[in-house]
Structures are given as C-alpha cells and as structure tokens.
Length: 487
Image (cartoon, rainbow, N blue to C red; front, top):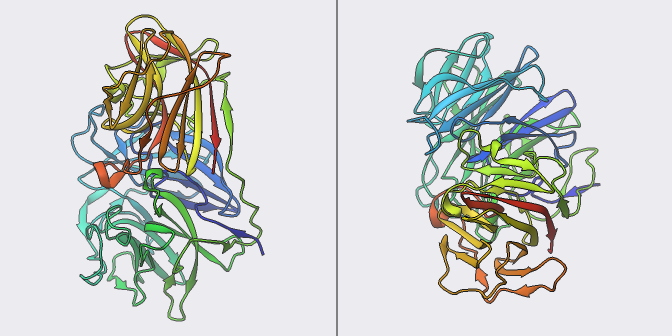
C-alpha cells in the first residue's frame, strides 16, 4: 500500500479550505499579507497537489481563513479581510468572489457588509437557503445568488469546552466548516488558539438535523489534537473534512507547526477520518511518520530544487509581495532578468518579493545588480517588518541585517554594484556568502541563529521566507535566483 508523510503541502499555508468537484479536489489557504493571494491547488488523491492559479490578484486587506463553495455549478470563495496600513478597511470585513470554474477568471471582491467577523463557513440548509457561519459561532443568511446578506449576524453555537487543565493558548472558537452526511449537518470548528503552546489548537465537531440547530457536541471531542509536545506536529487545527477518492473513505486537512520548526509556519496536514457507530468523526492520534495514503495516491515528490531566470514575470506559484500597496505589481519589469523598482527606506517598508522555503535546511542564491544611486538591494530571510536577517549592497558597501535591524559590524565586501549573494539556512543556523560573478565565494564574518523567528516571538502568524528587496529611489536587477534543499 502506498504511504505518505505530512505535510502534503509544505511551507506556510494555514487554514486550508477544500472542496471536492467531481473527481478533483481544490484547495486554498489564508494568504495573509501576500499578493497575489488565495493560491489555488488541484489534486485527485489529496496527497499530491499542483498549482493552478491565484484567485485574488489584489487583496483588499490581510486575507484570513476562507471557505470555498459550489452552488448550481457556480463557485464562490468567501473571504475575511483584516485592516492593514496599506488597506482602506477599518475593521474585519467579509467579502466574496465568484467564478464559473475553479480555474477562473474570478470576480473582483464584493463587500457583503459583514463587519467584525472572520472565518466564514458556507452551507446550504435543508430548505435550500444559503448561510454563512463565522467565528463566534455566528450565522447570517445569504441571498439566493450568494452575493449579499439577509438580516444580521446571530449567535448560534457556544462550542465544546475542554478541561481547564489542558494547556492551550486561548479558547478562540473559530474556523467553522460545515458538511452534510446521512441527513446530519456537521459543524467542524477550531478552539484552543492557533499558536501558543504545542497542545493548544484542536478540532471539535457538533451536529444537528437542521442548520438552525440545536447543535449537539460530539461525545468524542476533540476530533483531533496534539496531545503531547513530543509529537511530530504541534497546534493541529482549523480543519476541513472531505470524502475520499475511494468513495467510502473520509479525510481531514488541517494545519500544524512542525515540532521544532515553527519558523516554517503552519503547514498542511492530511489524516484519515473514521466514523463511529453513532455517527461522529474521529481523526488520528498522531500524524507523524508514514501513513497509509488514499486509494490511488501518487508517490510524493522529493524536495524540489529550482532556478528562476526571470524569463517571464513572477507568478504567485513562486513569488508574492509581502504587505503590498496598490499597484505593487507595477514595480516589476523584465530586462536581462527581473528589475524591481525600489521602495521605502529599509527592508521593513519595501514590500519585498518573497518565496516559500518548506525545508529544514536549504540555500538560496541571487545575482543582484544595483541600478542607480540611492538604492540598496539584497537577499533576506524575512518574517515580517520587525524580524529579518540578510544582506544588501548599494555600490559602496554591504549592509548586514539581523533581528530586523542593521548590524553594527561592517563586512569588508567589495564596493561593487553587482554581487552574487547566498544565504544558507541549516536547521536555523544561517550563513551568508557572496562573490563577484565568476569569483570564489567568501563567507560572511557572522553566523546567525533564527529558531526564534516565529509567531510566538512577535505575534504575527507568518513564516520565515527568502526575500528579494530593493529600497531607495532607484531599482535593482535580479538576474537569477536558485533554491536548493539541503535536508
């Protein structure tokens, strides 16, 4: 029998939303401060996934957990946006986009007028009416076309309360996902907090004969949870349950932090679901190691090495902007590589171009060419605007960053406008190398330890990602970038 190992999609991909369309599964996840956002992936076996498109070229705000729905052959993604410095929003607001096919094209976001709520979960009730559930757990009716609301949010479910002795971050009832099976509506939610202690986040279930309740909690709750910090995956939660490829099997996709590697963010986990004789879903005790795969699953690919020579403009599959302002994509041009117009005064406010690093150990190389005066450009490992490490050049010197600040120690690098930079991250120990084209590599005089670059340190639910940046008034050319897994 074919086996698989988690994650089924590595790197920071929190809050998976999944829908089965015929024999295919479609999935997206919270894109937070990235643009383009809501990257859509397709699979036939729940184990191997291929990128298809980005449904959200220009987010309205920070993109939290979404839900995907299909009604009468039309597809919908319900999206909560959170205010950001680059957004006009003043409070959390739920929008919707729609399309005739999952491949798109997707509409512009439509404001549903739902304020102060996140984590929408769509369901069609027993009477054919449509509803959204949100964190809380609250519910609001939708119009028949799903593009507007009827009435106001109302509280409908108090959740399942775990023993107070359990070590969690916060109760935080959120992430409702609804499914219908055997004339029951199942409400699958998350509690315990999404980061914090390893044993915090968990999945719970309730059911009702009607979307109007009353909701009965499962006597087998939680459906899944990290019960011990020694387990391979921490903070498992925010799940979607779907029927499997075999037709009589069920599976759950959730997110979790890898033990010891919170820097990689919340990764997508797959686990089997069994149904008890009294009709309740139960997940796996542990999702580490080799697990039996769904019927017909293809073998998982080895960690991928790649090179981008920028013969075309970047797509969301590999590169996204962090904290993008309006028209961020206009900063990009092709001219013997990728030309990135500079922005801001430091890496913190430059909206760097970031990529996913799903491996424990890896190296990334970039050929950097500073164009114009008053410009600095370089290569980083970037968590957020307060936490990053790396180097940049401006033609006169190399500047080193650690902990989100310039380092006081000067590096005697050549005063040139073009330099090849390499960052090597070996299980959180970071080395930096540089050379002129065709020359020998020189190791930077400092090494850095970055295991603390994660959500529990600074609060943001992000990950440590390689990044290209250009700050100042000019631009920079990146002739190529190469990523190599070293695990």
